[in-house]
Length: 180
Image (tube, rainbow, N blue to C red; front, side):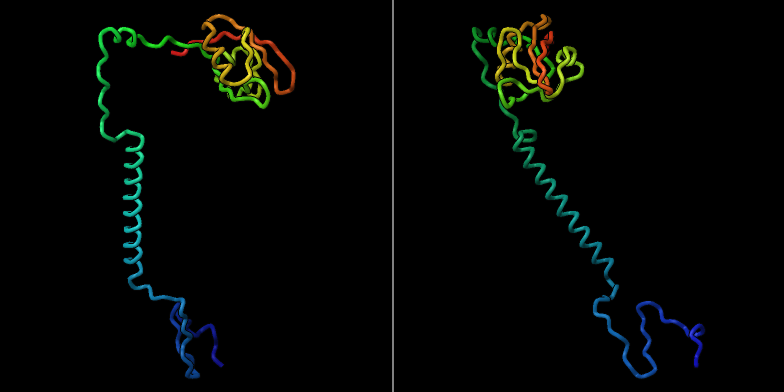
């Protein structure tokens, strides 16, 4: 009997015919490796080129839609001299509370976010508060709050009625700031 430790073992992928005259086992899933690197490299370069070109195409379409790289727009025709003075004045700066609001489930404007620093943060507004009244103006929607804030004078304190998330009502003093 032959010792197994001294018998040379075949390299992986190379099967030696056995002594009984049997053929080596054929493995159909083991493909030859010759030419595989070149084929993979060419396939990768082709896929990369296709992705690059499609990305450029998408970018050009997006730029044309948004008007970034599209044809330049012509300036509007000049206004007569009588109208030029009325439209040349910049819009006056408006007041702001420094909060983002949305319509509440019931009457009021729901505070979604409070800008730090800002007049709303200074007054004590927190996310989840429901603004019910600003000064003498009743607030039923977010648009009502926006109108009331624009009507208020920047720098002048205004009384703000709020219902907190816990259900407690509170009156806060807020001083709207300027938006420039």
